[in-house]
Image 1 (cartoon, rainbow, N blue to C red):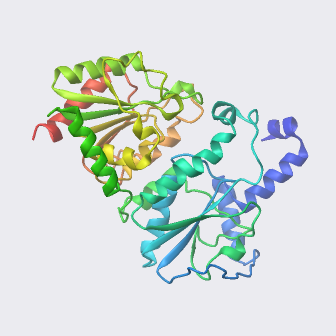
Image 2 (cartoon, helix red, strand yellow):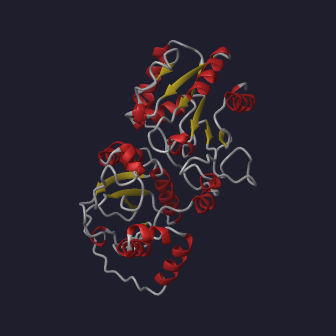
Image 3 (cartoon, rainbow, N blue to C red):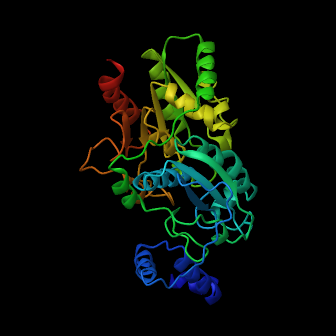
Length: 371
């Protein structure tokens, strides 16, 4: 922190401090703010202006000024679902709060990799479609930039709890989320019926009786140390064919056409890159789905109908693939699964070598694919 203050100045520090009190990030500051709020030092007056207000609907707020434009949004929706069910509320209405300050292409490594135009694209093509796949979803709205949150808050319960202009809690930590999810009080995501129809027709067009094993690749400009080892996955796909399975590659959306030459001997299914309803339906159709350090694995592990092996190794060179990510996994609960996962949803800390892929598959096959 001291080095950042020296680098960015005292003005930056004061702004960061104010943000920390409004949307605490660090465990210590979360405890401090939670303690302060018990004394109602952040009072508010709430005015209900939402014409569709219903007693069975929970209004949830996702603030892109403090949260990401990524598949982590799926965890937020499940957090909200669990909260709603504990309060006997049956529906979720989503409010998206857009960024107030427009990011520039050279602001940080992530923005450099994806470009600042990617953020608005992801609202319409990632976040909102994900919400539509959730079991309690009932609608959404995107607030005007700079709008007062208080005037949109429904009188009574909201999520995150006590969300206002002055207090905007962040997504729970992995360890906290693991404990919340262990009770398995959520239904999560599912594929839309129309998506299932289209995927069924696509599978029929393959004219094969082989069971499909999907391989979702990561080939991304940001945090590239997490990218899939293409040669190892190709060896694995060739081996699957020899075992009479049909491997299908789903490329990374950010590099959808870059690997056509390398993957030429295999089926490349690109349509799910641009349609999350199709992606979810495809994952439900497959006998098994492989993910390697993929953000989109979130919608798979939170769908109880998706058979999966999610590989999330700790990568020293990575900024994000740290041990923290693996705290959702609880070895005391089950060595192969997340605390809330189904029996056929596995979690692995292995890197993507052919031997690791083969060994995991053989163990999985014995339990679930040879019955």
